[in-house]
Amino acid sequence: LGVDMVWDGGQLGGQESRKDREKHMEEVCKESAALREVVKKYPWFVTMLKRARLGELSRNKAVKVKLECLEEKEARVIGNNLIPCLKSRKVIAAGVDQWKLQNRAVGELFEEFPWMEGMFVELGKGVVKSAPWGLMFRVCFGALTSMVDLVTDVYVTVKFLNAGKMGYFKASVASLGVSIGLQLFIVFLQNRNLGLGRVLKEAFPVLIGFKPAVDAYNIAKGKKQEVGQTFDPLAEMSYMKG
Image (tube, rainbow, N blue to C red; front, side):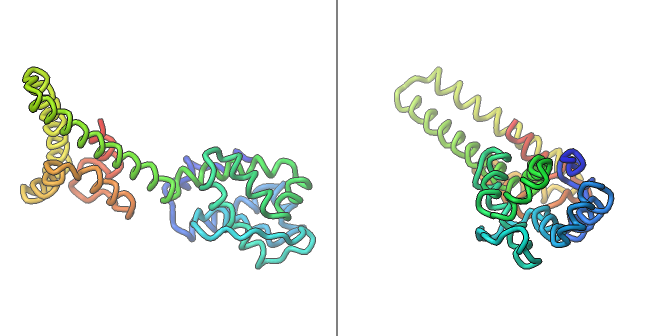
């Protein structure tokens, strides 16, 4: 059943609103014979599944209530707990296992329905892949490493100059020049239809070495591709990193 919980890399075919995600969970519960059986016995399961699917960061609060005593309120908290558990582990299965250990009812639910643990592992893969906090970590880490690389390159170039190693110095300057030139070319391709002013504005962060940080900020805040631009923000950042 886990495969049924995976949709276009976790993106719901491009529909990412809160309402769409909740509606999708309701439809899955209705279409799956296995899940219908679970919902029939535990009506609060739909709420728990919705909260788990939303992918929203929240405080992790362990719930020790038995499965047979669980109600809607506790189910909501347990669903919210999945995301912090996934975020705290590098492996999705380990995150789901932590979730199971922290919330007694989840462990009992997995014992009653053995297939369910695998389902939540697949669900977790989709959530982590599409959640803003998952993407944010990747792009911010990438931006940081790119900026550190630039600072290191400049430092090494200056060291070559001070040491009188002009051959290495010229090669290092040429390498930096090519890198910056390619980034400026990408900026031009991206914004050429928006006017010279926009091209110059976007080129400035490249010249001062802050382009990776700007791109990471745009992606983190959910900026979309503007009309007239050639690439979406994530693709632009990927090309910049080369």
